Image (tube, rainbow, N blue to C red; front, side, top):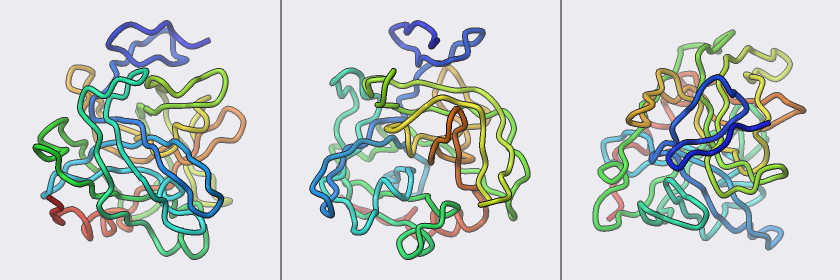
Length: 235
C-alpha cells in the first residue's frame, strides 16, 4: 500500500523512506486532436540556457499528430497551481517516435512561454545526465509523477525508489514500480535532494507492464535532442 501523504511529501510504495515532492515536477494536460480526447501526463523542468524547457514523454506530445492545448503545472496539488500554468511554445521529439513509435525514442522536450518570469527562474531545473551508449543498468533512481489510474487519482505526486536494468528486447530500462497512466513523462532522478527537489534526470516514466515501469535510455541522442531546444527563447 502507498505511504500516507504528508502535506509536503510525495507518496509511494516504499514505506521505509520518505520522499519530498518536487516543485520542479508537475502535471501535464493536453488535447489529442486525432481522437478528440483530453489526457494527462507528467513532466519536469530541466535546466537550460533559456530556462524554459520541460522534459516529458514522446507520447505526451505526439500520437498521430501533435498534441494541442498543452500545459505544464509544476507542483500541481489537488487543483492548486502554486507556481502557475505554463503553456507550450514548441514541442520536440525524435523522428524515431513520430515516424515509427519506437519505444526507445519515447522522449520529448517542450519549450514553454514565459509568464512574469521564466519557468527555470520560478521553480529551478533538474540536471540532465546521459551516457554515450545504452546503459545496462541505472542505479539509485527516484521516479516521480502523477499516476491517474486506480488506485491513484492524478491529484498528487507519487514516487518509487529503486534501480533499473536493461530489457534487451527493445532497449528500454525497467524498474519495479506500480505507477501507472498519468505518470508518463515524470522524471527518473539520480542524486535526488530531498530539500531542494533537485536531481539529475536519467530517464522518464514511459510505460508500464504489470509492476514494472519502463524508460527510454538517456544516451547521447537525448542530449543531442536537448541541445536543439535548450537555448530557444519564447517570451
